[in-house]
Length: 112
Image 1 (cartoon, rainbow, N blue to C red):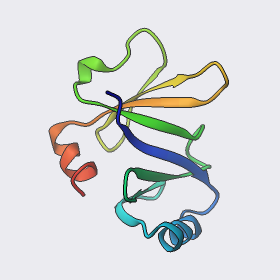
Image 2 (cartoon, rainbow, N blue to C red):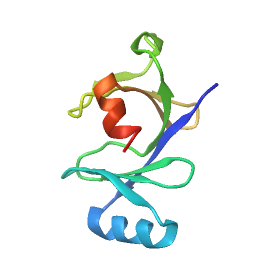
Image 3 (cartoon, rainbow, N blue to C red):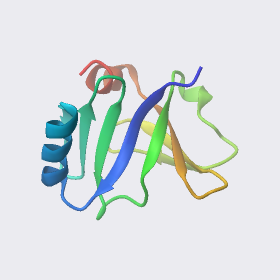
Image 4 (spheres, rainbow, N blue to C red):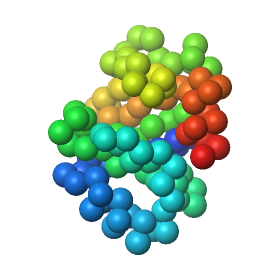
């Protein structure tokens, strides 16, 4: 079973986007840094990502074990927050991230 962990949306202004999504979706901020704000909505998370720091929008599928990350395709990124993602482009140019959280990061990102 594939579980959508988050949908990452590229924005020009994190604070304007945060306010808009909080007002329109009753989202709650669960993580924030200078390049990224994570919002929780009823059935998933939205990552507001700063266009100046990210290459593309994407949606992310949660991977339970690090060994389950794809190894034969995509770009592996060890994020500054300790998570590991593998970005794979579909045949239409859309990006999917397979994302893995360490036990410590699960506490931050999944139980926030």
